[in-house]
Image 1 (cartoon, helix red, strand yellow):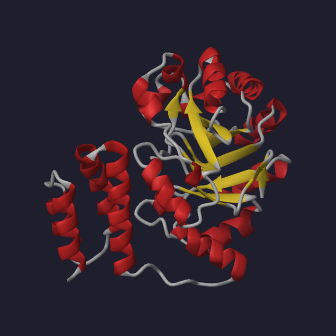
Image 2 (cartoon, one colour):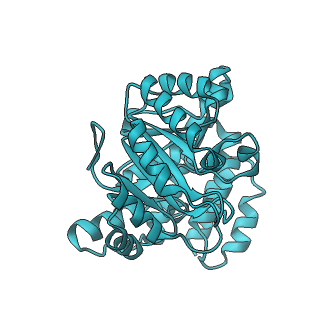
Length: 318
């Protein structure tokens, strides 16, 4: 499929996740056939102010291409600057209009934008005018059950020049509770002519297939379902394209992937930060494995990569 002029290998995408989708994890998912990967969301205002920590979130490499960089903000000047800045190296600029986090919405950013559709229009038009690459938008269905505006917002986005829309099938007030509403995602798909990407509660290849058929969307975006399970992309792509149910990863494959992930994190961020970053990933990789709780407790006390590697070797040798 294509988003604007960007050709994609398949239609199963990795969602942007704060604190999760850094360069090492994106590379792991790309190796496992993710059709498009997204950065963690970055503040447009922080880029405008030349914040060095924010710029570190944007480190990329050719191996992960094509890459979507997600920006957030409600300040039009900051959106203009950020769109221009990231379009120098990104293949797609994505605007976050779905984040439910209090620290984001208190500044009128993220999903709060869905309460001001005129500003939604201005932000998208500004991004499109300043970006060298296609601009896309990720949004929720609305602020709460009394303010379901996603169909109208999607039409506004298309008219403003967006090249695709991702819809997470929950309101802001739901956060991640309840079930994603794929019927409203279907309504969005039927209301616009640009590609629509569906997101929410896709945790297996079977669910991905069901949601594609149910909603008619052009692509599926997987977030929490990929955390600790980057193989979900390959499994889903093979299932959709060839009808093949490839084998789930063996413990040996999990072990090798964790070691590679640790190595990538260490190269990228240095040993001290990498070991701490890997705690949450190792916890996710080993969830539901035998004696994983006590194993994770050990990992969470370790400060060196060598200790972590030794502990992993012992655990997976059981």
